[in-house]
Length: 310
Length: 278
Image (cartoon, rainbow over all chains, first blue to last red; front, top):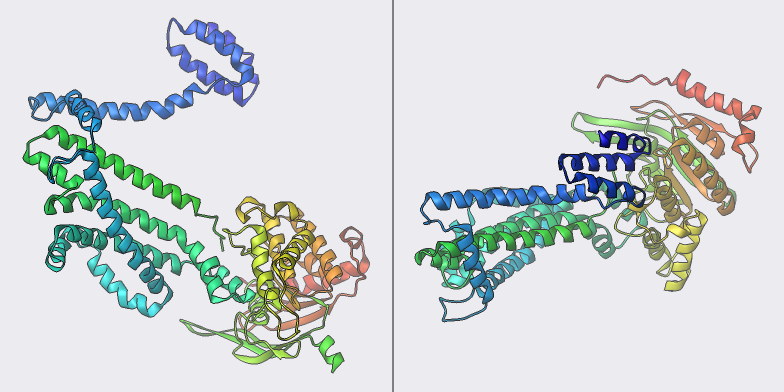
């Protein structure tokens, strides 16, 4: 009742008032102690009240999502009589692990930090090699029809092959676990980079090429001012897909090759039957992958410009 | 000889253009004969699909005719070049460069190196930048020079396109429906600006349009084309209206109304477009 009287003069004010209305409607549901809040809200109408509602909508669903995950995890933990450790135990273990991530007790017992860095290093090397080869090949395949017809069947054939199938070949040729893992990353990263770069080159708008012809630009200017900038967004998409796959594959590859690395660490903890650490590793792998993806999306948007529509 | 150069600055002789398509050869243009004098403003008008843009691309050198030849300033047009600058229909600015950089790209190419044919020496960076600034000032875009094309309106983009073309000091300015994508008010404003710029720079202009008012207001000569396929020049109308022209005064001008009627008569009575069933 009170709120109804309260609303009537505000309804005519406009969008801001509507927002405040909605704000107050949510307040209404908070039963008894809502009265004083409403009173303060009325004072704030003129000075743009802080938008708690949208903050709620931004924060609440993700928190609920994580809550659901932890809840199911806890239920599974209880029903398996703690052979899957409970969230609380895992958290305690995580605090211990993260308090000293960079220790070294011999080659097979190193801190989580070292393992992550070792994996990231492998990904960086394999991925860098793939970029060094894949991007120029992509340019060539996109630019020349002959090469595109020559390479397309090969790419179509090899791309669906699981990168792990290449691991034995790597072990055989390079005679070492580390280069074999890098080789696997190389193979899985190269396809998205070739394909996306080639598509980008093929999709350079004809209008831009006409501009280049009318201005009679030099070959160097065409590459630096027209081809490269218009291909860049496609190339970065390729890079993003490649990094995603590489991070997926490195865990599996390291499980097979051993040494130092997050994948090996997971396998090692399984052999020790230390399930808590495995769960921690799952979270860490997820977070690192998320950070890589996010960073590349940021880079990609910074280099994407409005296209001319023809 | 001198006379020949001024009255036949662009000389198109028996040009025919046939495209190869999957369904066999497609004749877009046939038997095109046209001359454009130096400093003349020529409009190409006709229904869509009549090969206006094809003809413009031929003059630009972006395509090569299957038969006949085109001369510009007594030289055969063998390919595109900055002496025949094009203002594209969709502005075609490079979105990753600022307006200044877009214009500078052409300026740098034309004046950054010594010109063999005119003997002009290469200009230094300050001179090149001054040219770019001047071109942007000509179209009234000095404040937007450091903005990217994505940040400015359609009319402004088209003005940058015009500035880019004019900054190269071309012998001929080729415009492919430059204002087609703009709203009526912006279009009128840019037409007035173009009239002013052309009067100041004495440019030779060939413009493709499908707007009757635009053609009559701007041109000295309106080239009306028949419907495609195998389109050709149906009629050429000389527009002898005094310059400077003012659209408000012309709206009641008897001569203007007659010119306008002649073009409309050609387009809608004699060449009324029949939509073919594709």
